[in-house]
Length: 139
Image (tube, rainbow, N blue to C red; front, side):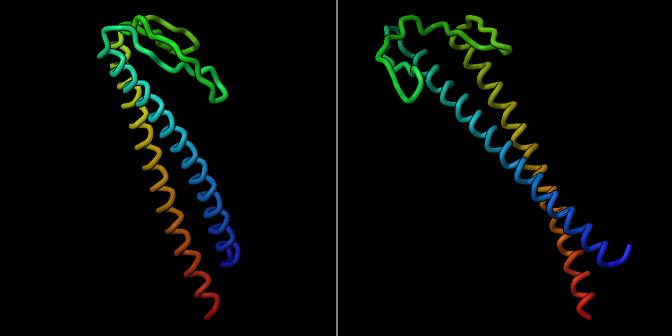
């Protein structure tokens, strides 16, 4: 492979790394949003769990629209266990499950961050190699 072909292969690989990084950053953002969503649910459950009477709540119905409502039974909640299956759980059990999901998502986020860092490191190495080839070609 001549130097021009080698340079082209480096540039192609660098572009691929950029695309992978962009994709992973989007996944990282999605996971971050999921963590925030679960965290809000956990905080809400903890606050509702501390109430021993009916609680006034705003119930979202979509489109940024809410209805005044009352939560009458806050000691149990309906909890999605996956595949659209919902079961009744105590608030405490739901909080524990949510915390577990948050932990799993944080581990996923750490793996994604590690992958991004590795890809950026490899792209940096290729950039240096490409720069050296360009400098040699100018001589």
